[in-house]
Image (cartoon, rainbow, N blue to C red; front, side, top):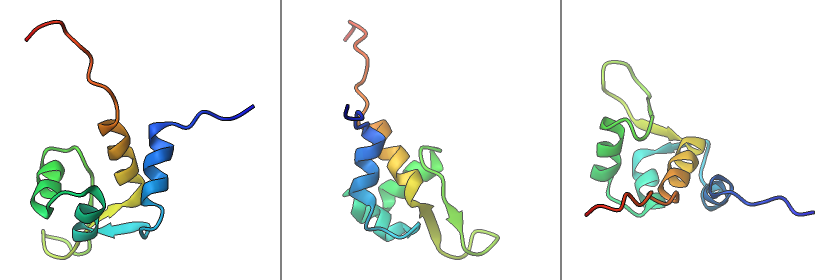
Amino acid sequence: MHARTTEHDTANAVLSHLPALVPLDDAAGALHVTERTVRRWLRLGKLRAYRTAPGGSGRVLIARDELGRFLATLAQPVPFTGTR
């Protein structure tokens, strides 16, 4: 019996070459978007990140597992509401 592959499994496989904590620019490259888009997703709470220094300075790092979770949510179909 084969285990069913989920969107999360697929996303993690795509990101497996990245380090456990991914710098913002590398995350943008892996997601094929600009750094500005990743920053917007962070601001909107769609992604979570860490800063290497307190007070807003320092590098922004995103956990590889967080990127996988986010990619899996993008792969989910949008429900049809029947309205335009």
